[in-house]
Image (cartoon, rainbow, N blue to C red; front, side, top):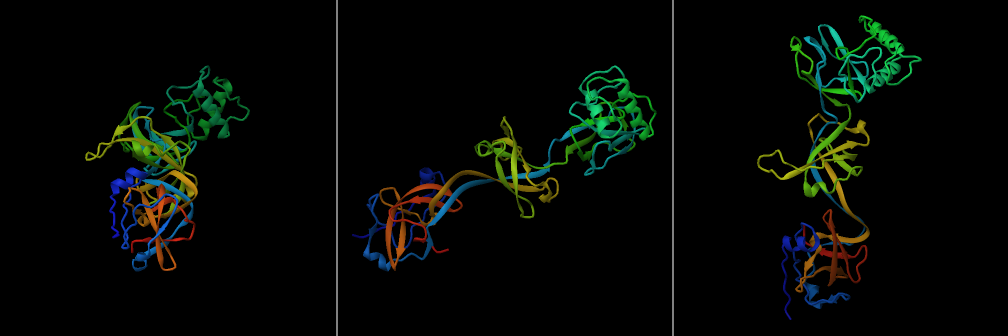
Length: 362
């Protein structure tokens, strides 16, 4: 009986195995009506060897999705002026400030950085109480001005004395009181993303003067809802940097609300994802540079796989591979599993690691 080649489209393979691969028939044709447990050998295959072969491989198989993102910094926030006057100095974009570092100056008086989660919104003085008082005391202790100072929520005379020592060190009037015109709180060291005002500008309380971020590098990306399902907080990923370097990262946040994409040509709803780096010192690249995050989906351990191009479509709608041994070929019906990395997981009678299967010539 004459044999014929059965063509299979990408759509069919995708429907059967969740992949996006095409199956191409080999030059030797395809066997029909094979059973599920036996391989059929056709003597006519002697004259129809495939143009190339590839081995059956045994090992772990993982599928992954690469999503393009942008290198940036975490915790972007606005920093507003705490006093009215003329801006006489301001940090430049790209610079960094640590505890007690200068941020900007109004009428010649510096506003310096202190660490804390609550904003500096009032003048602190003896008798004041609150979390902002405790934050201030923690900073005074850390800077060496509060030796013996009890760190609590009460602004005591000892707190005022510590403030005076800090003021003296910075050549300020020693009032023992401190307010937004002297310090600003942030959760830690900051990087100045941009100066939003210029020297000589008039400022007023609440007017934005700086945009800051943390000093931690991150990748920020907007993923389609279907892709975002791969991202789990704490999940491990690989990030390809602009220079081609691959570094390890961790998903630190996944948005909970889908928003239309910013591209006018593609308004597909997307989820915001942030990835941090396991070893930040290895991260090179300018701010806003492109980076690709690879999310690993399903992993199958210790399975057999063949190149996707080795698959043959059988007349009954199933799939097979063409095994090549000793100058002869035989077709083996296979059950498909995971598609990944150009390979497909297969199980079939007589298949083992190292067995050669026919593939199209590259």
